[in-house]
Length: 122
Image 1 (cartoon, rainbow, N blue to C red):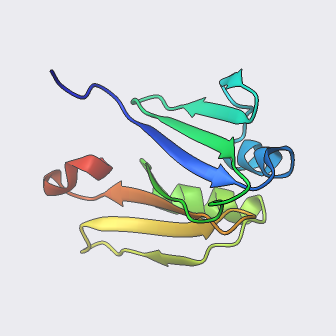
Image 2 (cartoon, helix red, strand yellow):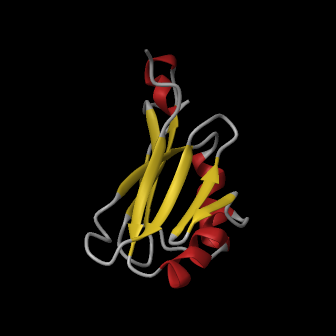
């Protein structure tokens, strides 16, 4: 028995309001809408992000999305007028990051591993 994939979840208060923000963020509509109150995006190298509506408990999610270019993502976020809460990383750092929050306050981290030791972010 082994884990073969991951579904990360983000709880939002109002999917009709926040869903379009995620579409803007990813530049595309969700890949699936498997049931009422749930949107899913699949990523090229594996894994899915589920954005689901839950009235209580929203705004407490935290997800890290692996990038091949955090610098490129920062440019994209600025072009889409999505506020970057913080960013870190320089040529000597092991991981570059850019952190944003969705309209409900959920934290989304974009991470890029810069060496073989940080495989989960490569």
